Amino acid sequence: MLVKSPMKKDNVRPNKRKKKKNRKKSSSQSNGKVYGRKINRGKSQKKKIPFPRIKPWKVITGAIVLGLLGMLYLKHVFATQELLREVQQAEREYNQAKRLHSNYRLTYDRMIGPAEIYDKAKGLGFVNGGPAEKVIEVEK
Image (cartoon, rainbow, N blue to C red; front, side, top):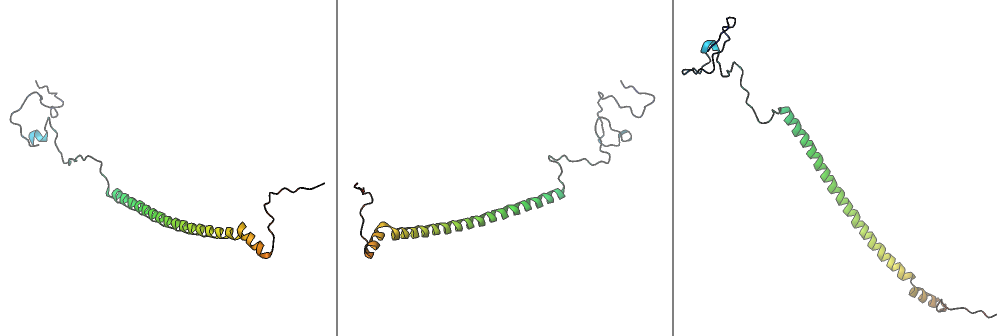
């Protein structure tokens, strides 16, 4: 059953339960009005993409920022390697100075050691006093 209002004769839709066998697929049906399906009236349909549209200037800016960060990282790596080389060189110099100091200390200890001192004292005519732990007795 189709009910039409006398005021709105042009905008009345047909009953959807009624099936038409010869339906044209063009949009020229009944003054360009097609009921029951969407029509494209001059608007281009947008393709749905899975991710939001990224502007080219954002990609370029991101690439520049990533490039700058990469350059800073490489600069840091090279500076760290140079610092490591300097530390290793200073450590080598320190170990060499420590060895020389040990050798000089050993030579000095031999020069002022008890055997050398006793030999020099005998050569100058001094007499050995014996052990230092002797008890001196004083008579009253």
